[in-house]
Length: 194
Image (cartoon, rainbow, N blue to C red; front, side):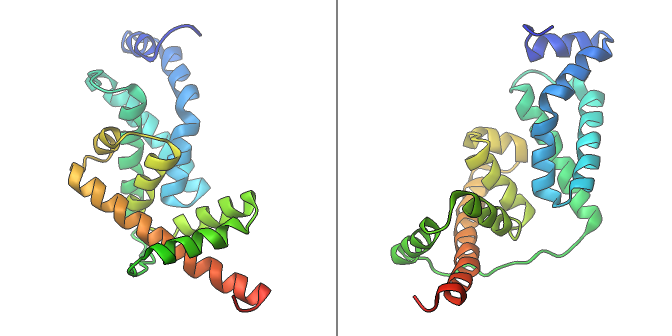
């Protein structure tokens, strides 16, 4: 079965071969779990969301038309399932006001981050991303980490192109503000004033 495409496995699944769907689950389980954990912020809840997403994918597989890649279609299901879980939980999220950002402001944050080791930088960015609203966090993750195109992000989120662009722009600015507010006080307290 290793040489077959997703379409082959989908076709076999629709004909009743549950092993074919198990292959798709195995292939995409990490992708779905990563998205879920970034959105719901809890490993246990992300496992539930992942299972729910695959159950929905199996249930709605006959409706998959092949207009997009299977992975994009599955992302959309996982994204919506994550949003549903967040709505059920109905926690309030930390909204950080977006400051006016200048070129100097941006370069100062980049300079600060340049002094931090790569692993620490990744941890800082990840912690800061957790402070974003779930839809903005997901859009940033899709764009920068999963390298989805704008068209694919629109398809996954069901948002308009203008809305995705606005949220991407806001999320970048907000993340930069969060990084600056998180990193600078820590460096100042550790190394003294700049």
